Image (tube, rainbow, N blue to C red; front, top):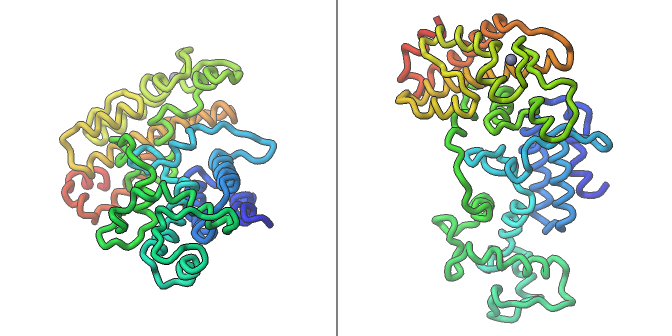
Length: 356
Ligand SMILES: [Zn+2]
């Protein structure tokens, strides 16, 4: 087995493919990442290997397999951003590898008493030679030449020979990794999507809906994928199925929204998910109340999308009355689960309203 196969075989099993998006992200981040981390920390992996691992992860996330391609709903670069910058926090293999390997360089810079650093200093480096100005000869090993080729990218982590990304000068892979990621735009509403009240399975669909990345009939058409008809299947208004219609204007979601708004005693505006979150973010509410309201909006989007898929793919009609009861029951469970949290203690009336 090649190293790539060893790393990726776990995501190719039948069991892994049946997982939800949320489960698959967890597998990529946890299992795969830990195995990769083992290999990547020891070796500088060739670019082709890193590209291959990225490709396997990408296919696994979106449910593709060899010979059966599925559409990647979000660009991989965005998937790999940390959550507060709008991503799923999947680690960029290439940068993580670089950050891991950076530890080897740190050991040399600090003349650490480890076998590898001593060996390198004896074999390749002249006495008192500076690693930053060292130029490896052509007959030195591939790893040594590769490390030297990468060292320029690592030089900004040091200030006069001292690693400056941690306060004590000790090497940190994640600090180096974050430095490599550079500056990114913050997604202001990310904390409302990845909040503990929202059910895990609803967070991923919410994240997609926030970016208008769900494959509505309108989006399919824009991608030049043939659709039988473009009309919304949840109401009989004969209107095109757009994000705006499905999540803001359609009777199906609005009936459910009205019942939930009355239950909460809060007017929930008829907006698409991103605008709803922006609206919630702008209220003078406690953070816990914002998270509860975001969870309701997320649940509405999730259930509407599910009802739409049941109608399109299984010709089954889902009643929105049943959905409301389900959302209320699940919210009650989540809120009582987290009612002891410090931020929840500031909203006793809200908890009372939901749980009693
Ligand atoms: Zn409709």
